[in-house]
Image (cartoon, rainbow, N blue to C red; front, top):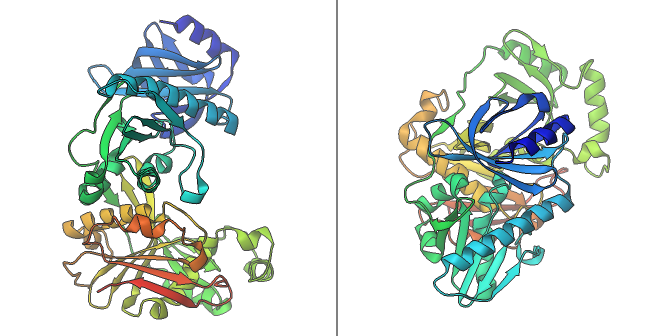
Length: 452
């Protein structure tokens, strides 16, 4: 085992960026990485080394297991405090494609000449992160375990869009240890499960996707109503243009100006993220953060700005929503991922509403919104929301939550309808397209779908 070479490499480079299973990325000093024969300690993780792979002269992948455990963790060490450049990213993806191509030759029932692709097809919404293979009648699309979680999860939409182009049955290969969200989706998307063949990659070989549901250990951040009404009222009297919204994660009430927090009121003190005096901050934002401005502040956090406008117009957007129970930016935790539900609300007759908001095109909007819907449904059925302080004194209906997608009409990606066509029938979906000038005034240009 090449531990001596690794020791030399660690001594030469003082700082490392460490990826654990392609999910957690940390910057560490070399003194935090210790080698002892066949054991390595990387920060808080200690593992017995199974294999050392040199991806490049100064990039190393270490596969290791905890003592008495069978599950393998993959650590990738990159020199320096930053992740690899775009060129290095392409090289890593190409290395994965070559490695996977060899495994496919062993897995497929007969040898075929392979045609390999990895180009980005923006027109059809297929990113360059997904190596594709054509071998005989087989079409295969995969994703590298070292990709970020959103990229791993988006292989589903890429596969669906690619299948419409090649007119063959598609096999999808997902990382064995990073498929929690994909399994969770397939649990409710039985039509999509049957549409493709699903395989998993463990870093060495290909096998059928493991049976069983995804990691369903989800939790919702508790909501604790705060006794801050007096201070909030005082500030709103001075600055009537501010909007109070619950800051659930921060245990505060945020006062926003066009989506930007200018004050965070807690029970023991009030913080001013942009400084004081508040008169100066609000006056400056009013000048710079306005419709028609090209200043960077006018383009920052546009989805927060749109969200704030929608909260103010919620009665016109969806008349059935109860304005007394609207929770923006609700933190939820699903398996390995930390997610934020844009708006969680309830109708006047007690039906939950999940609203996903986008200010710019995002091809993965439908499946991302479906993830939130799946998590909300789990908690609704378990009664977790009211136990966590949400929707007090509301009798929630035993019906699936409404899922609402809101974006400027031109920001809905051209692939949207293809992706929502595979949603489960029990998902009540409404799409609302807005005008491009929503910063000045919100107009509803199109509604598609049925709710209720």
